[in-house]
Length: 561
Image (cartoon, rainbow, N blue to C red; front, side):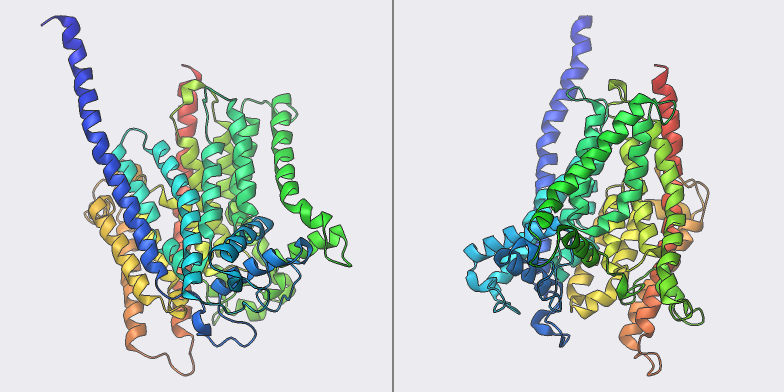
C-alpha cells in the first residue's frame, strides 16, 4: 500500500466514526433536554407558593407567585414613578429595575393572552385562574430555556470541547438540579434569568484568543451581562467580589504597575461600561419620579426597597452562620445589639470573600491573551469556582439571607461536575435538603422526593461520583481531577452527612417536636446545613488554589512557546 494512502486512512476512519457518533450524541442531548423540560412542567403542576392563601396571611395573600403576578399588574397600569411606591403593604416591588421591565412585558402578554382580568389593577389580587397559572408557569419555563439552558450548554462545550459524552452529562446534571427546579418551577420565581445572565457573563469574561475581536472586548461584554444579572436580582451581588477581583486581574495582565497605560485604559473602560449599563436601566426612574418626589429621592427609595436592613439579620431558619449562632447557648441575635449586627455580618463576609478574591486576582493577572491560549479554560474554571466561593461566603455570613439564595452557589458549581463529581453531588443534595422547610410550607413534598430521586439516579448512571466514593472508602488514590489523594475524610463527610440528612427526615416524620421546642426540626436543619456549607467553603477555596497553580503553570508554558 502506498505511504500516502496509508497516512490518509486513519483520518478517514476518524471522520467516519465522528460522523456516525454525532447524530447519536445529538439525539441524546435532545432527549435529555426534552426530559428535563417535561420534569419542569410536571413540577409546575404542583402547588405554587401560598396557593389559596394556604398559610392564612392576613396582611396580604399567597406568596412569591402572587407577588410576581402583582408586579405585572402594577407595572402595566401605573406610571414608572409609582412602581416602587404603590401600596407597599401588599407585595411591594422590591427587585431591581430589570425585573420590573420584564414584569411589564409579562403583564402585557398576560393581558393579551389570558385576559385583562388577570392583571387588572387592584381587582386582580389573589387571581389564581388555571389558565393564568399555566401562563405564569410557561413564562418561567421559556425564560429558563432561553437564558439558563443556553448558558449551561455553551459553558459545557468550553469545559469539555472534545468529549461530547462528558459534555452531555454536564448539561444533564446541571439542568436536573432539584433545588433550582423546585424553587423556580414549584415555589415560583424567575431565578434562572439572573443566574443565566451571570453564567453568560462568566463565559464572555474568560474568552481569550479570539480571532475576530480584541480579547479584552469580551470582558466588556461580560460586564454588561453581569450588570443585567445584577439588575434582575440583587442577589447577584454574591458574585460581585469574584467578578471584580478577576476583572481587576485581567485589567492588570501584562502591566507593570497601576499607573501603566494599558491597565488604566482597561480599568476605566470597565468602569464606564458599568456606569452606562446602570444608567440605561435606572435613568427612567430619575426622569419620571412619582408626584412630589425628586429624581434623587426616587432612586434612593428604590435602593431602600432592594436592601431592607430593617428586616433584621435573617428571616426564617436559613442554613447560615448567624441563624446557627442564634440558637442557645450562643443566642447571638439576642445578645448583640441590633445596630451592630450589620457590621458583624459585613466583617465576616469580607473575611470569607477575601481569600478567593486574592486568588482570582492572581489568576486574572496570569491570563495570556493570545491565540496560543485558545481552548484553554482554566480561566473559566477559576471564575466558576471563585463565584461559588464568594456566593457561599455571602450565604453563610451576610445580612438578610434567604434560603433560596443557595442557588447562587449551586449554579456555577453544577457545571463543574466533571471536575469534582463527588463534591458536586454531595453539595447538590445538601442544598435541596436545606430547602425542606420551604418545600414543606409550600406542600411540595412529592415533587421534592421525585426530583431528588431523579437526580440521584442520574448521578448513579453517570457513576463518577460513586466511583470516587468507592475509591475514598478504600483509602486508595482518588481521581486526579478530584484533587484529593490517599484521603478517607471525603468519604466520612459524605457518609455522615447523608446519615444526618436521612435521619432528620425520618425523625421529623416519626416524632412530634416537644411543646417547649416547636421549632426543633427547622433549627436542626439550619445547624446541619450551616455545618455542611462551611465545609464546602473550604473545599471551594482549596479548588480555587489548585486553579491558581494550574494558571501559573500554563502561563509559564505559553509565555515561552
